[in-house]
Amino acid sequence: MAEKMLQYIHEQPMVWRHILENRAALTAPLRAWFTGGFPHRLLLVGTGSSGNAAMAAKPFMEQLLHREVTVAVPTRLGTVLPPTQETMVLVISQSGRSTSTLAAVHTLQQAGFRVAAMTSDPSSPVAQAADLHLLIDCGEESVGPKTKGFTATVLTLYIAAMALAETFQTAFPGEIAAYESALSTSFAAAENNILLCRDFCVRHMEPLARQPHFTLIADGAGLAAACEGALKMLETLYVPAFAYEFEEYLHGVNNTLCAGQCNLLVLSHIKNAERMLRLDRYGREKGCFHLVVSTLPLPDHDACMLQLAGSGMGFTQIFETSLFFQVLSALGSESKGFDVDKPKFADFYSRMETKL
Image 1 (cartoon, rainbow, N blue to C red):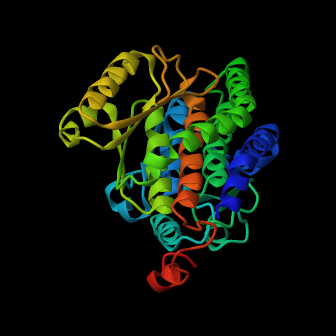
Image 2 (cartoon, one colour; image 1 turned 90 degrees about the vertical axis):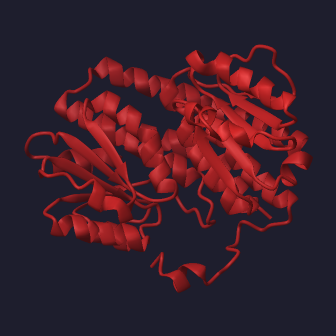
Image 3 (cartoon, one colour; image 1 turned 90 degrees about the horizontal axis):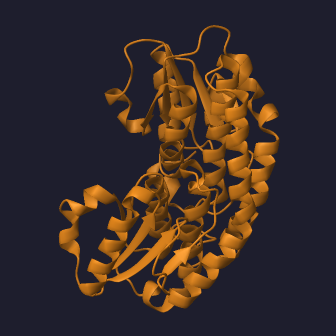
């Protein structure tokens, strides 16, 4: 019942390699777009998985471009519109049919900004309305819960940053080559990581499928994966799922610890690994059901800990730990008898006018 979703999950390594190998052609329109100086600020606009992809790409883009990168949802533009025109605006919508994102394009253009759009469909309304289009070259993804489209969007933002860094010389060629090498290492591990995630989820599916809600806890680069993971679980398991930054969780949200609660911990930064594992032990003492996902070496590894391979770099982790939440969402929905390859409410988007 999640055949298409699982198919798209398995297609990801091939999609990623294709995008990275063809990054020069995919970013050529962006290079040609700039005839003057490089803007001082970048504004990324997106909602749902597109917004999560922007959040995941933000640290990498800031590091490579030495510019402030602001992420905003389309309906909150009034709080972030900059006072000057020295801003590059990039709106993101995989389908290119989001009504709120399309409205944001018009709002930004009326305010005097040139707007670049990133979609998987050049003929979509968002792509057609923007001043420039960048292709998310992930192919068709007909199911609602996006997997390959999400990670392909992150990677397209990465290669856009690489192109701008090369154009405006904010990074050395050797630096960009090192980033490409780390990405290739991460991509090479993906197929086996997916198999590890499937085996891990199958072993724990009985308690996972009956959970009334989930709390996802992550730090550093893992937070974007947790936010997207919570969205995927909401879309497929039909129960509440909340993502929290590690320190935020420790300052109050920890009061929710109780017997039977399911917490999913994503370890992403070595400096917090010991404390997060301490939280894992503490929660288990309180009767919580905990699963730990990490690309870091896990001491005292047990059956509730999933060790995935990766490049060892924070910016590639989104292509590693995201796989767990994608696989959990697909297999969990099947276990609960939900067909996530089809919309639960076929008329919802048209009734609410959220997609064209």
